[in-house]
Figure 1 (cartoon, rainbow, N blue to C red):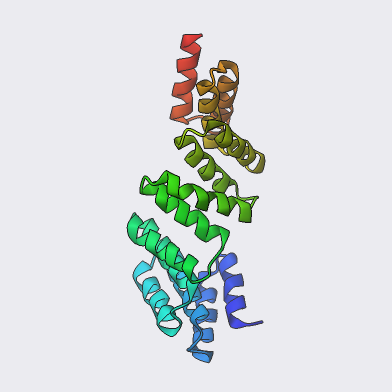
Figure 2 (figure 1 turned 90 degrees about the vertical axis):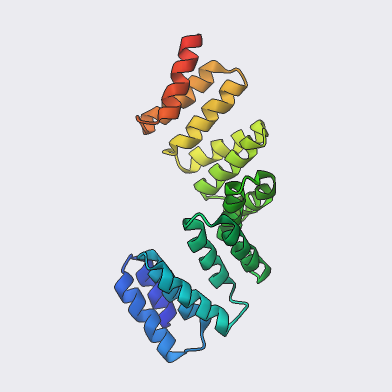
Length: 217
C-alpha cells in the first residue's frame, strides 16, 4: 500500500503516531509530493499543533501552487480560530484551484454565515447538500440559513431531512418547533420542542419555547 494511503488509514483509526510516521516516510521517498505534506499537516492539526500544520500546508503550496486541498486545510485552521475573512479567502481559493468537494462548499457557506452573509452562503450550502445528500449537519446548516432568510417552508424540508438522517439532532427538532410556532401550529410546535428535550433535557431554548406556548394555551 502507498504510504499516503497507509497514513490516511491510520488517521481514520485515530492512530496519529503511526499516521505521522507513514506521511514522514512518504515525504522522504518523494519530497516533491504536496499530498504527503498536506496529510502530515492534517495530522499535526488533529493533535492541536496548528503552527507546524500551517508550515506543512504552506510547503505543499510552495511545491504546487494549485494544491487545492492545502488551501482548504488552511481555511479549516483559520475558521477554528474565528478568522472568518481569511478562512473565506482560502476556501474560495481552494474552489478556484479545482476543489469542488461537498466539504469545501459547506465550510465556505458556514464561513459566510459567520460573516453575516447568509444570502451569499445559501448557494454554497445548497451545493454541499447536493453533493453529499446524507450529511445531516450540512442539511441542518442549510435549513438554518434558509430560516434566517425567512424561507420557512424550504427550511422545514431541510430540518425534516436532517432528523431523518440523524434522529438525535435536538437543534433540528427545536428549529422545526420554531417553524411550526411561526406557522401558528402550536400542537406540532410543542411536539417538536418535546422531541428536542427528550434528546437533550438541558436544551434551554426548547424548554423556554415549550413553556411559552403552554402558558399561552
